[in-house]
Image 1 (cartoon, one colour):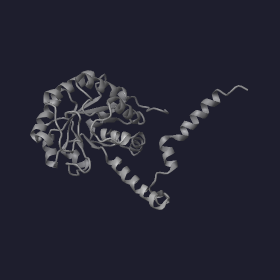
Image 2 (cartoon, helix red, strand yellow; image 1 turned 120 degrees about the vertical axis):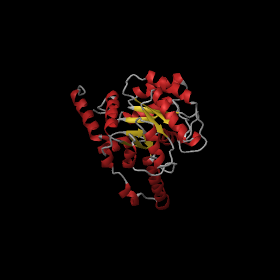
Image 3 (cartoon, one colour; image 1 turned 45 degrees about the vertical axis):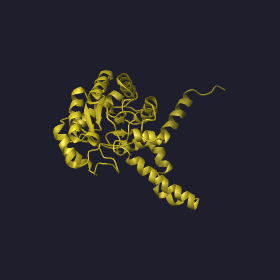
Image 4 (cartoon, rainbow, N blue to C red; image 1 turned 135 degrees about the horizontal axis):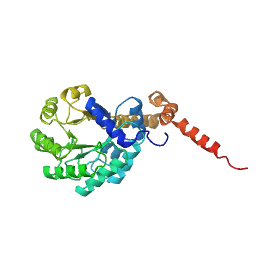
Length: 301
Protein backbone atom coordinates (compact mmCIF):
# COMPACT_ATOMS: atom_id res chain seq x y z
CA UNK A 1 0.00 0.00 0.00
CA UNK A 2 1.35 3.40 -0.94
CA UNK A 3 1.79 6.33 1.46
CA UNK A 4 1.61 4.17 4.60
CA UNK A 5 2.81 0.90 6.08
CA UNK A 6 0.90 -2.29 5.37
CA UNK A 7 1.18 -3.47 8.98
CA UNK A 8 -0.92 -1.74 11.68
CA UNK A 9 0.94 -0.30 14.66
CA UNK A 10 -0.74 -2.70 17.08
CA UNK A 11 0.51 -5.63 15.03
CA UNK A 12 4.05 -4.19 14.97
CA UNK A 13 4.04 -4.00 18.77
CA UNK A 14 2.96 -7.64 18.98
CA UNK A 15 5.64 -8.63 16.44
CA UNK A 16 8.28 -6.88 18.52
CA UNK A 17 7.19 -8.82 21.61
CA UNK A 18 7.45 -12.07 19.66
CA UNK A 19 10.91 -11.17 18.39
CA UNK A 20 12.15 -10.34 21.88
CA UNK A 21 10.92 -13.70 23.14
CA UNK A 22 12.86 -15.51 20.41
CA UNK A 23 16.21 -13.76 20.07
CA UNK A 24 18.32 -10.64 20.56
CA UNK A 25 16.94 -7.93 18.29
CA UNK A 26 19.52 -5.67 16.64
CA UNK A 27 18.16 -2.19 15.92
CA UNK A 28 20.13 0.28 13.79
CA UNK A 29 19.36 3.94 14.36
CA UNK A 30 17.21 5.57 11.71
CA UNK A 31 17.05 9.37 11.71
CA UNK A 32 14.69 9.61 8.74
CA UNK A 33 12.30 7.45 6.75
CA UNK A 34 14.63 6.43 3.88
CA UNK A 35 17.24 5.14 6.34
CA UNK A 36 14.53 3.07 8.06
CA UNK A 37 13.35 1.79 4.69
CA UNK A 38 16.90 0.78 3.79
CA UNK A 39 17.26 -1.06 7.13
CA UNK A 40 14.04 -2.94 6.38
CA UNK A 41 15.28 -3.79 2.88
CA UNK A 42 18.45 -5.19 4.44
CA UNK A 43 16.35 -7.50 6.65
CA UNK A 44 16.75 -5.88 10.04
CA UNK A 45 13.87 -6.94 12.28
CA UNK A 46 13.30 -3.53 13.90
CA UNK A 47 14.76 -0.03 14.03
CA UNK A 48 15.53 2.51 16.72
CA UNK A 49 14.71 6.22 16.47
CA UNK A 50 17.24 8.25 18.44
CA UNK A 51 16.16 11.48 20.09
CA UNK A 52 19.60 12.88 19.33
CA UNK A 53 19.27 11.81 15.70
CA UNK A 54 15.95 13.60 15.30
CA UNK A 55 17.00 16.74 17.16
CA UNK A 56 20.45 17.01 15.59
CA UNK A 57 19.19 16.16 12.11
CA UNK A 58 16.00 18.22 12.13
CA UNK A 59 16.95 21.44 13.89
CA UNK A 60 20.70 21.32 14.46
CA UNK A 61 20.21 21.47 18.22
CA UNK A 62 22.21 19.44 20.74
CA UNK A 63 20.45 16.58 22.51
CA UNK A 64 19.18 18.59 25.47
CA UNK A 65 15.44 18.43 24.90
CA UNK A 66 14.93 21.61 22.88
CA UNK A 67 12.28 20.11 20.60
CA UNK A 68 8.87 19.51 22.12
CA UNK A 69 6.87 16.33 22.29
CA UNK A 70 4.60 17.19 19.36
CA UNK A 71 7.60 17.89 17.11
CA UNK A 72 9.33 14.65 18.09
CA UNK A 73 6.19 12.55 17.65
CA UNK A 74 5.57 14.02 14.20
CA UNK A 75 9.10 13.22 13.02
CA UNK A 76 8.98 9.72 14.52
CA UNK A 77 5.63 9.02 12.87
CA UNK A 78 7.08 9.69 9.40
CA UNK A 79 9.69 7.02 10.07
CA UNK A 80 7.46 4.44 11.77
CA UNK A 81 4.78 4.63 9.09
CA UNK A 82 7.24 4.26 6.21
CA UNK A 83 8.15 0.71 7.22
CA UNK A 84 6.49 -2.59 8.08
CA UNK A 85 8.96 -3.54 10.82
CA UNK A 86 8.61 -2.29 14.41
CA UNK A 87 10.23 0.96 15.54
CA UNK A 88 10.96 2.07 19.08
CA UNK A 89 11.69 5.70 19.90
CA UNK A 90 13.53 7.74 22.49
CA UNK A 91 10.91 9.72 24.43
CA UNK A 92 13.44 11.46 26.69
CA UNK A 93 11.98 12.25 30.12
CA UNK A 94 8.39 12.01 28.90
CA UNK A 95 8.38 15.79 28.32
CA UNK A 96 7.03 16.61 31.75
CA UNK A 97 5.49 15.16 34.84
CA UNK A 98 2.91 12.40 35.29
CA UNK A 99 0.01 13.73 33.21
CA UNK A 100 2.30 14.86 30.42
CA UNK A 101 3.97 11.42 30.43
CA UNK A 102 0.53 9.87 29.89
CA UNK A 103 -0.10 12.14 26.91
CA UNK A 104 3.36 11.34 25.56
CA UNK A 105 2.73 7.59 25.66
CA UNK A 106 -0.61 7.91 23.91
CA UNK A 107 0.83 10.25 21.27
CA UNK A 108 3.68 7.93 20.34
CA UNK A 109 1.34 4.94 20.36
CA UNK A 110 -1.10 6.69 17.98
CA UNK A 111 1.84 7.72 15.79
CA UNK A 112 2.61 4.11 14.92
CA UNK A 113 5.52 3.30 17.22
CA UNK A 114 5.89 -0.19 18.74
CA UNK A 115 7.41 1.19 21.92
CA UNK A 116 9.33 4.00 23.62
CA UNK A 117 11.83 4.47 26.40
CA UNK A 118 11.56 6.98 29.22
CA UNK A 119 14.58 8.08 31.24
CA UNK A 120 15.12 9.04 34.85
CA UNK A 121 16.98 12.29 34.28
CA UNK A 122 15.87 15.73 35.30
CA UNK A 123 15.02 18.12 32.48
CA UNK A 124 16.85 19.47 30.61
CA UNK A 125 18.29 16.02 29.98
CA UNK A 126 21.80 15.31 28.70
CA UNK A 127 23.25 12.68 26.41
CA UNK A 128 23.59 9.50 28.42
CA UNK A 129 27.36 9.28 27.88
CA UNK A 130 28.14 12.83 29.04
CA UNK A 131 28.98 13.99 32.53
CA UNK A 132 26.77 16.36 34.49
CA UNK A 133 23.53 14.37 34.50
CA UNK A 134 21.05 14.86 37.33
CA UNK A 135 18.52 12.16 38.20
CA UNK A 136 15.00 12.37 39.50
CA UNK A 137 14.22 10.25 42.55
CA UNK A 138 13.47 6.58 42.14
CA UNK A 139 9.95 7.19 43.43
CA UNK A 140 9.37 9.96 40.88
CA UNK A 141 10.41 7.60 38.07
CA UNK A 142 8.18 4.87 39.46
CA UNK A 143 5.25 7.28 39.29
CA UNK A 144 6.08 8.11 35.67
CA UNK A 145 6.22 4.44 34.72
CA UNK A 146 2.96 3.66 36.49
CA UNK A 147 1.38 6.56 34.62
CA UNK A 148 2.77 5.26 31.31
CA UNK A 149 1.28 1.82 31.94
CA UNK A 150 -2.06 3.40 32.79
CA UNK A 151 -2.02 5.53 29.65
CA UNK A 152 -1.27 3.00 26.91
CA UNK A 153 -4.17 1.44 25.05
CA UNK A 154 -2.34 -1.53 23.51
CA UNK A 155 -0.79 -3.78 26.17
CA UNK A 156 1.84 -4.88 23.64
CA UNK A 157 3.17 -1.31 23.29
CA UNK A 158 6.64 -1.68 24.82
CA UNK A 159 7.52 0.59 27.75
CA UNK A 160 11.25 0.66 28.38
CA UNK A 161 12.73 2.37 31.44
CA UNK A 162 16.11 3.93 30.77
CA UNK A 163 18.25 4.15 33.89
CA UNK A 164 21.06 6.73 33.84
CA UNK A 165 22.25 6.00 37.37
CA UNK A 166 25.50 4.16 36.54
CA UNK A 167 27.53 7.32 35.94
CA UNK A 168 25.80 9.29 38.71
CA UNK A 169 25.18 6.93 41.61
CA UNK A 170 27.12 3.80 40.61
CA UNK A 171 26.32 0.34 39.27
CA UNK A 172 24.64 -0.99 42.41
CA UNK A 173 22.26 1.96 42.47
CA UNK A 174 21.52 1.43 38.79
CA UNK A 175 20.66 -2.20 39.46
CA UNK A 176 18.41 -1.25 42.38
CA UNK A 177 16.60 1.32 40.26
CA UNK A 178 16.18 -1.21 37.45
CA UNK A 179 14.55 -3.69 39.79
CA UNK A 180 12.18 -1.07 41.14
CA UNK A 181 11.32 0.18 37.66
CA UNK A 182 10.28 -3.34 36.68
CA UNK A 183 8.06 -3.55 39.74
CA UNK A 184 6.49 -0.22 38.75
CA UNK A 185 5.42 -1.67 35.40
CA UNK A 186 8.27 -1.28 32.91
CA UNK A 187 8.42 -4.01 30.26
CA UNK A 188 12.18 -3.71 29.79
CA UNK A 189 15.17 -1.91 31.27
CA UNK A 190 17.79 0.17 29.45
CA UNK A 191 20.85 0.52 31.72
CA UNK A 192 22.73 3.45 30.21
CA UNK A 193 26.49 4.06 30.21
CA UNK A 194 27.70 0.72 31.55
CA UNK A 195 31.47 0.65 31.18
CA UNK A 196 32.60 -2.96 30.79
CA UNK A 197 31.28 -6.27 29.51
CA UNK A 198 31.47 -7.47 33.10
CA UNK A 199 29.10 -4.71 34.19
CA UNK A 200 26.63 -5.69 31.48
CA UNK A 201 26.84 -9.29 32.64
CA UNK A 202 26.36 -8.37 36.28
CA UNK A 203 23.37 -6.23 35.43
CA UNK A 204 21.75 -9.05 33.47
CA UNK A 205 22.29 -11.47 36.36
CA UNK A 206 20.72 -9.07 38.86
CA UNK A 207 17.84 -7.69 36.78
CA UNK A 208 15.92 -10.61 35.32
CA UNK A 209 14.07 -8.68 32.63
CA UNK A 210 14.31 -7.90 28.92
CA UNK A 211 17.34 -5.60 28.74
CA UNK A 212 18.42 -3.06 26.12
CA UNK A 213 22.10 -2.36 25.42
CA UNK A 214 23.21 0.90 23.84
CA UNK A 215 26.19 0.30 21.55
CA UNK A 216 26.93 3.91 20.75
CA UNK A 217 30.27 5.20 19.49
CA UNK A 218 32.78 7.39 21.34
CA UNK A 219 31.05 6.89 24.69
CA UNK A 220 31.64 5.10 27.97
CA UNK A 221 30.70 1.65 26.68
CA UNK A 222 33.44 -0.44 24.99
CA UNK A 223 32.73 -1.93 21.57
CA UNK A 224 30.79 -5.14 22.18
CA UNK A 225 29.21 -7.08 19.33
CA UNK A 226 25.52 -7.95 19.11
CA UNK A 227 26.47 -11.61 19.44
CA UNK A 228 28.37 -10.87 22.64
CA UNK A 229 25.45 -8.88 24.04
CA UNK A 230 23.18 -11.80 23.26
CA UNK A 231 25.46 -14.14 25.20
CA UNK A 232 25.33 -11.70 28.12
CA UNK A 233 21.53 -11.90 28.14
CA UNK A 234 20.42 -8.72 26.35
CA UNK A 235 17.18 -8.73 24.37
CA UNK A 236 17.85 -5.57 22.35
CA UNK A 237 20.97 -3.86 21.02
CA UNK A 238 20.66 -0.39 19.54
CA UNK A 239 23.16 1.48 17.38
CA UNK A 240 21.49 4.88 17.78
CA UNK A 241 23.75 7.32 15.91
CA UNK A 242 25.93 5.03 13.78
CA UNK A 243 24.24 5.78 10.45
CA UNK A 244 23.98 9.49 11.30
CA UNK A 245 27.70 9.79 12.08
CA UNK A 246 28.69 7.90 8.94
CA UNK A 247 26.38 10.13 6.89
CA UNK A 248 27.88 13.32 8.36
CA UNK A 249 31.45 12.19 7.67
CA UNK A 250 30.53 11.27 4.09
CA UNK A 251 28.84 14.62 3.55
CA UNK A 252 31.89 16.40 4.95
CA UNK A 253 34.04 14.57 2.42
CA UNK A 254 31.95 15.44 -0.61
CA UNK A 255 31.68 19.07 0.51
CA UNK A 256 35.49 19.23 0.55
CA UNK A 257 35.44 17.80 -2.98
CA UNK A 258 32.97 20.40 -4.20
CA UNK A 259 34.87 23.23 -2.51
CA UNK A 260 38.27 22.20 -3.83
CA UNK A 261 37.43 20.81 -7.27
CA UNK A 262 34.04 22.23 -8.14
CA UNK A 263 32.71 18.81 -9.17
CA UNK A 264 31.18 15.74 -7.52
CA UNK A 265 32.54 13.32 -10.13
CA UNK A 266 35.10 11.85 -7.74
CA UNK A 267 32.32 10.80 -5.38
CA UNK A 268 29.96 9.08 -7.83
CA UNK A 269 31.10 5.62 -6.74
CA UNK A 270 30.25 6.52 -3.13
CA UNK A 271 26.66 7.59 -3.93
CA UNK A 272 23.37 5.79 -3.96
CA UNK A 273 22.27 6.15 -7.57
CA UNK A 274 19.11 7.90 -8.64
CA UNK A 275 17.65 4.54 -9.68
CA UNK A 276 18.51 2.91 -6.35
CA UNK A 277 16.80 5.72 -4.45
CA UNK A 278 13.72 5.59 -6.67
CA UNK A 279 13.45 1.84 -6.18
CA UNK A 280 13.72 2.23 -2.41
CA UNK A 281 10.99 4.90 -2.42
CA UNK A 282 8.78 2.90 -4.84
CA UNK A 283 8.71 5.91 -7.16
CA UNK A 284 7.28 3.95 -10.10
CA UNK A 285 4.42 2.58 -7.99
CA UNK A 286 3.28 6.10 -7.16
CA UNK A 287 3.42 7.06 -10.83
CA UNK A 288 1.42 3.98 -11.81
CA UNK A 289 -1.20 4.67 -9.15
CA UNK A 290 -1.56 8.28 -10.31
CA UNK A 291 -1.92 7.17 -13.93
CA UNK A 292 -4.45 4.46 -13.07
CA UNK A 293 -6.67 6.78 -11.06
CA UNK A 294 -6.51 9.45 -13.75
CA UNK A 295 -7.54 6.92 -16.42
CA UNK A 296 -10.58 5.84 -14.38
CA UNK A 297 -11.91 9.39 -14.28
CA UNK A 298 -10.90 11.10 -17.52
CA UNK A 299 -11.64 14.77 -18.14
CA UNK A 300 -14.79 15.24 -20.19
CA UNK A 301 -14.33 16.68 -23.68
